[in-house]
Image 1 (spheres, rainbow, N blue to C red):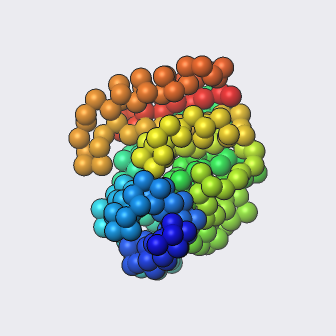
Image 2 (image 1 turned 60 degrees about the vertical axis):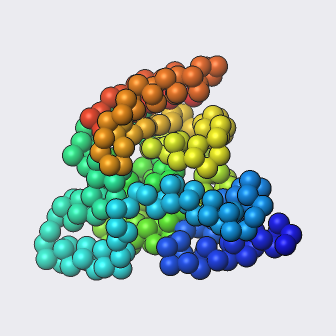
Image 3 (image 1 turned 135 degrees about the vertical axis):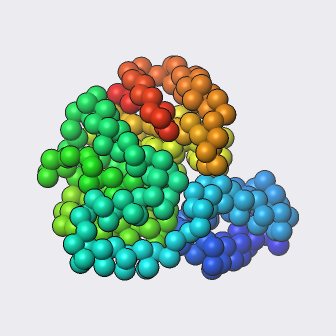
Length: 268
């Protein structure tokens, strides 16, 4: 079977599967192309592609929520008089990254914006549920926040919440892939716990991703605990890795240490 035909068949198979039907098709195609290049056997290529997809997308959900039910519950909570922050917090804890950040979310962004200043424009790549942290960021009502992720259902949820809470004039979420798609300028770009995922897909890609960001500041973060909650010397490992990665760049970097996350604020 020619490789193009194999790629097409694998993309269709994975895209139509129950587990990955909410993943951006361009991302599936990109990963499948890499898989076929490395594993010319169809069965092995499919296994490789699904394994990568699980590592970069599926692993961040303990149990993937039913987003229709999440949305319905959010609406009910707001109608019952629950505050927006309280209703949103119930959603943030559904995903591992935002659940870890939730207890320190106000301090997290206070410290970041103390360095960058309050941005007029923000791009949040591989955003997950993080755009819902908007309600703790204390941003001016003129700030434009553009969020991107490969999860179609999640993006739909973010836009519904933005519309319902009256911030859709500031916050917009779009299905997109940081590797394959193009982006404009922003004062601040968020790459929160994103580079390790990209490295799992394509070794050595991190510096290219950093260099192509059109911005004043990039906020790069790394986990310091595994998804299972174990500390494995990750803070020291990622500090060394990031310093090595950027050692030849003429960027100014400030390091922030949080209980669950290591952050580098990079001024380009």
